[in-house]
Amino acid sequence: MNSVIDGVIRVSVILGDLLFALLAPLGAAWALVIVSAVTGLAMLYIWRYTSNQQAIADARRQIAAHLLASRLFRDDLGVTFRAQGQICWQALRLLRFAVRPMLVMAVPFTLFLAQIGLRYEHRPVEVGETLRVRATLRDGALALGVGSLL
Image (cartoon, rainbow, N blue to C red; front, top):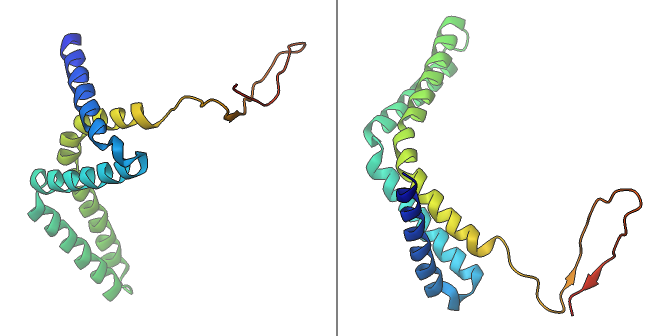
């Protein structure tokens, strides 16, 4: 099992290296804009083809109908409470319809976000850059102030 996971990680690192090498001339900001746009489109495509669109539309129509019923019959507590219960039930149905697309997207996008994090979360301190370090010291320890790398 570990060899499978190691293989998947190696492949994701190779693909990430290739993708970010192609985007490197654009700079980090534009690379992230492009990657975000493409990722968003991919997520929409996956959502569309892995979710039950007809059932989602039906649940939304049911929610709208029960909202209308609760407004039209607001003087009748029984109808209002039943409508609110149905609204909650339909909201849970919508949540259930979101599970399959989320499961399909979970592993690939987690690997992809890890690749983005490897490249953009941290960077080395540049020569001449001012660096501020904050540390909590024990009593009697020596404290250093703000300085710069030379």
